[in-house]
Image (cartoon, rainbow over all chains, first blue to last red):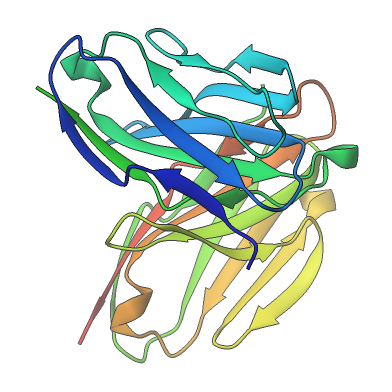
Length: 114
Length: 110
């Protein structure tokens, strides 16, 4: 089954404790992206990757890191989480040929930073 | 940059009613999708529809690319249709980036 898998789905952590949210897709997609969703602010892009070893900042990259060492994986790293990073996070992927790929989302990761 | 506007922002229906959600965009697009975010937060793909008309059960969508809008039709609504509906577009120019509308929040009452 074609899917985007995120882990963990739910996490409560404390300020400053490094964490990684993993994202994996099995569709051989070139494009992968991370979004955060907050009430009243919609979906905002954090980072995206057009292919292996190619990453770029989205609209709200501060406080986050990413890497794309393999095509299928695109982890999101919070080196020193703060309470303002409490949010619902989504990973997504698509085939980006000709800018016409269909975007698929993971199930979301609800993060609370105390 | 491209603007994506959805209307109405909120909608309350009785079960069994029909509805039309609209997505207007301000520039040419290569890609338009409709998503449903259910009450548990999951984002479900409904339609990939940069142009034309598609149907899937009680849902159908039409995109008129030349006039820069898309419509999502929900017929015989059910309580499970509740949630937020988003459209998202990718423009024909510039960075490959999905731009999301602010969504239509739908509540279907039993």
